Length: 62
Image 1 (cartoon, helix red, strand yellow):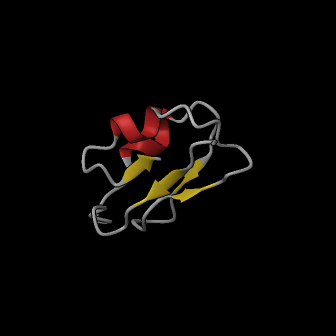
Image 2 (tube, rainbow, N blue to C red):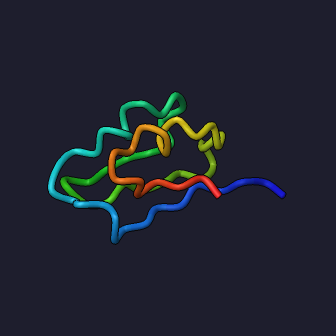
């Protein structure tokens, strides 16, 4: 079974620029203003870098 990246919006403070957006090696994460990040599943390679980097553990690779 292939893993999938999920966003737990309750864990995301949404009051700042998401630091995990910048660590994605393929640009699969984007953010509009201070909203929770959006995932482009067509680009996501499920490497886990963003989930490891997220300080609030709002990005989870399951």
